[in-house]
Length: 194
Image (cartoon, rainbow, N blue to C red):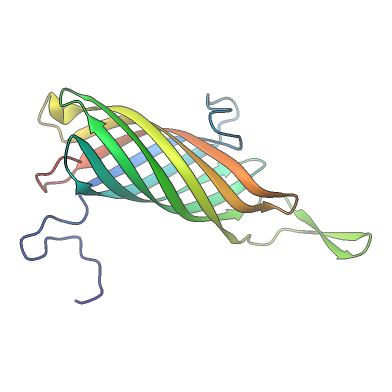
């Protein structure tokens, strides 16, 4: 069908989705690489996504599309849809390193009411369903490609993503957020390394 994204091969071309991944981790509200080490209480984050390998060379160029969410006691619960463009280096004997930039939408439903000014000097607590905001981000990951040492088409990763969320608070227009995750990526049967 024209205009429909197909996940299967088109006229002998490789499938659009070359790999799928799942990550679980800990979410923080912090500047890059602050509050990276998970601590109690955990602020769970989960992400699932697919990847397309645009360039398969010494350094691969990969585009990821991810959907995920987190639960945070003060920042609220959120759903995030992002796309990242990553540069990946694979050693060929296991170790893998990647870094990239991303863009997406982030929708937060706050767990606590926000005070809104109704008239000068008067405020009213409102919960609301939140609103979507733009996020700009960057990420780094390191892992081990099991496919280099066995027939398993899997890569185990430790991934750190950081985002600047627009519309965070009226007094803070950009909200810093990060997630440290452990993930598993499965390369699909396209024959290309992802």
